[in-house]
View (tube, rainbow, N blue to C red):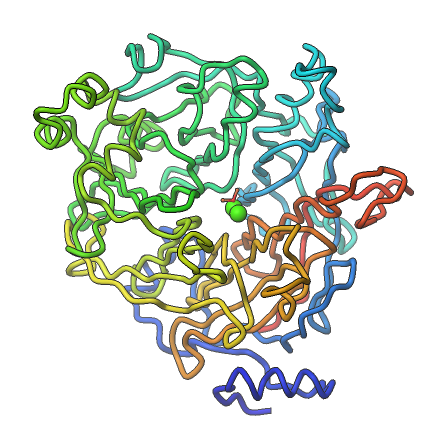
Length: 543
Ligand code: FEO
Ligand code: CA
Ligand code: CA
């Protein structure tokens, strides 16, 4: 059927009648310029296609499965507890961000970085004994967060995990990390130059030099339970999936907050720019701009660019990026002894980045989570998940237009690109990713306790949606996937040939109180009924 812009209400009525011959969702055809192609190739390692994606959108459902459009299928490639390498390391809990790193340019063999965000005591460390965890429980809690590097390959037409891999390894809450940047060795981090472990790893991004950035989000509970220094967490970490000798590091110049993700672009003058969300209510959108310039020939040495630069936060009213510097903070704090005591150096500023940003007039927004750059025109998309403090129940996606299209600009304009709610069919947009035709794919994060009730009834389970950013269906959401019960879909990422989409299914059956009666039994691996967070490979993409 020929594609026509679909009025959302008509669309839902259509679904309600059970009609299957829906218009396929295609978009963005033939509009990508040569310039966009080049940008897309360097930043996303994808080449735009002449034809867009096609699928028959699904209807919302509360089925306890990962439901996909007709003709698409998923394979579970790694679940909590799976052995991932020869050494016997195991896959952590609550997988989130995924990023595929091809081996020899293959879209069918590579390393997959996977974040592990948090544990559930019911399935991992067990309940506290009194008000404390034992050392063994804490070790489990720390081991099952961080990241997994797994080796995945298509064998006999099926994606498989290489359990004997020599390349696969874990980075956990027990792995030693180096600090870089202004806070390294400073009193603001208790003088530390290296710290123990990474945890609360939510989303992330890829650097131009092919390493992974992973973001420490809600670190507070784990660091408190484990008796670790709070100032050592809430950073962006960098890991080279291919090289265990690359010292894993935390870049303090990028600020410390509840980091959702890190998305890298290049300023017109060659400086590296990293856009970041801070996932809490009334928090700011940030970008870091390096002092030095990117030199491709320097390869992984470019990592040094993340050690020195300017951290900015967005002032939406003035449409300006505010530089979060110690000089500006102290000028603003003049006469306030408490603030002058709190902020003495740039280390104090990066450690307390949110407080500094708010002090300097940056705008508190509605849970800025993922931030991604369009391969089409380099505009910047921000998922504002929701904020019940001001009645933004279903969230929205904001789009920033940097002045002159330059990621290094200090001014920008913005629009609300899409809003959650009945009219759009989605609520609580969280992680974002683009395909090479500039379709924005978003997964939703309605909290498990609210799913299928009250204001969230019509959305049913959490889902995944494709939203064209150009063409007649610009801003219209087409549902591509529905999650198992009480699960959140997270961390979507494509292979370079876009024939496979990796996706995390996080916390299925999260509201379970009694292990004998789980609220979800997905994905039924290893013959058990225990719900297991898992990463899947989705195939069947047609162009
Ligand atoms: Fe971990 Fe903001 O989701
Ligand atoms: Ca998230
Ligand atoms: Ca979330």
